[in-house]
Image (cartoon, rainbow, N blue to C red):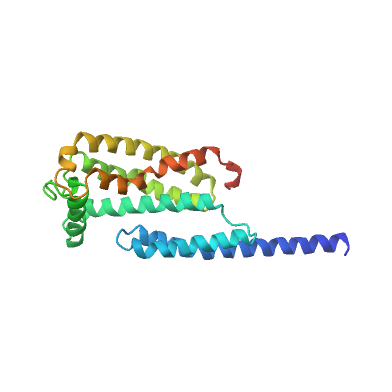
Length: 232
């Protein structure tokens, strides 16, 4: 085969490889997006988890087949951040604007009775309604419109391997550290309100607080990854 023909064949083979890689990533993302969306809606999370893991398995198969798909660590950090942002945005949005609906009074007050009495103590007795725990409503209103909406957008850009997604992921993860630290102090100072009489007090809080620790897990990777893998 002459050099020109060899170069043409190589070009066609590379294009086919890129097309197949793109299709494999899109196929895996369809499963993971559906699973992440269900997990971000609280109650359907048990249904969403196996769907999400099916997408992870498809991406692992594509990696083993030698296709050029997104790094697995980027996928896991991106989707975990997306789920974290959606869970908090949806839950706190219900508390902020739908606090008198039946589903919210069942879920939120039930949550308060089980884990965090800040969502049980004098619930719906403030002028704005919803949680009446000391400082809680300020967190709800402030963080919905800032950090958690920003984290969802950052996760989408990060999963698309965009430079701005990586940059905003760094910013929102450090903001998450600030939030987590302040929330721990709030929980500690008002422990007599938030943990008195609940079924699972401090142990229960640590069980669900694991999602808030995701910024700590992502920060070392975000600061050490080769930024050249993210496109402008």
